Length: 91
Picture 1 (spheres, rainbow, N blue to C red):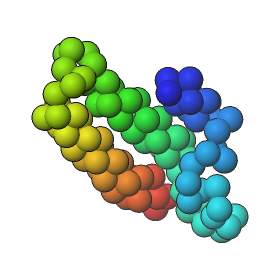
Picture 2: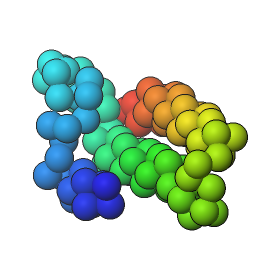
Picture 3: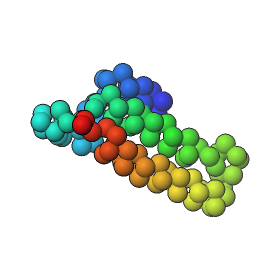
C-alpha cells in the first residue's frame, strides 16, 4: 500500500484515481491534481494503518478492535472524499 501511495504521489498512478480516470479533459482541468494525489495517498496510508490496528495491539481476534478499525477506515474515507471534492478543486 505504501508503494501504491508513492506511485500516486509521483504522478504515475493517476489512472488509479476513481473519477479522475473517467473525467473529461474539461473536468480534469478543474482539479488541482497535485493536491488530489496527496489526498488519495494520505487516504491509502491512513486506511492501511487503521486496518492494522488490531494486529498492532495483538487483538486480531477481538471483534471490538476489528469494528473500531472498520469505523476508522470509514471515517477516513468519508473525510477524504469531502476533502478531495473541496480542497482539490481549482478556484
